[in-house]
Amino acid sequence: MSNNIITGWDIGGAHLKVAQCDLAGNLQHVFQIPCPLWQGIDTLHIAIKSALKQLDPDAQKGQAAITMTGELADFFINRKQGVLEIIAAFNQYFTENNTYIYTGNIGFIAPKHAAEQWHDIASRNWQASAELAAQHIPNGLFIDIGSTTCDIIPLHNGHATPQGFDDHQRQISRELLYTGAIRTPLIALANSVPFKGNNVGLAAEVFATTGDIWLLLKQLSADTIQDISADGEAWTPYHAAIRLARLLGTDADDPNDSIWSDLARWFADKQTQLIVDAIKQVFRQSQNIAENSPIIGAGIGRFIIEDCANLLERPYVDFSTLIPPANNAAADHAPAIAITLLASSQFK
Image (tube, rainbow, N blue to C red):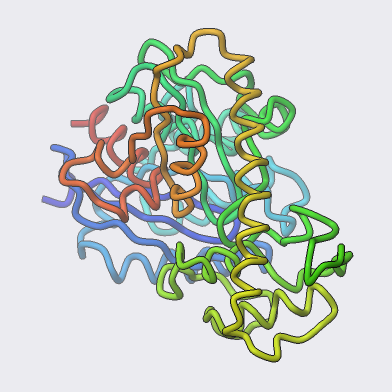
């Protein structure tokens, strides 16, 4: 029956992630659709319509659970406007009686309460994922690396226990890093690199991103990337090498030369160390995390988290193993899964 369907929507600034399950928590769909919200609210409408075509035909008659980070898109004048416009867009597809907005500690609320509680709605998708992970692993560190950001959340006694809850507070504590596996400009990682015996200054342009380095290192493949590359060309090792060379003010005459994968490894080590340093800070701030407690990894960049866990000599648990049956797509889009399963648990 349609009222037994719950669809979870995680609205980011670049992608719309969607998951659907029944009230028993059995997952039926998990996928992601490009949604460049900085181009305007119409991109969200296009993405929602595209998602509905992939879901159960009765999805709009069922229940919708919503979380978001897209309110930060610079299309909106401020976060409150972003929250309210995103919810208003969803109200065109789901009835208010069947729509629930995630607010972190407060739980789910009806859309009509969004205006007075927008601050509890803004950028809380990380909390849904961390709370779901804590139901399975009560004590540890939950980390989600997506295309753009990295969330580092302590878990204690079955709950997320961050230093702060909004993005500003979390950027202060380094529980939120603006570094991801695809969209981060490489100039955010360094302003010069060792190359052919010289220290070469980098062009202060978005000529190449982290998607290029992880593609060259075969940790990402073209079919896992839905973003547009820095130059609009294909996500192939050939074009990735060309983009890296451009950053150094030169050309990749032989894109297959190992010098480009070596350079990619140098950048990868920089990003990994950046995340390791943040993890260490979060550990210092969180006195309750035991030495042998695990790191739980989620997001499309969780291969980086596993490397970080190894460097820190911590046990690693992949988020995909927490949601039976093990599902890589579920781990790639953890907030959409989490919002769906938390809602199914509350409303069944």
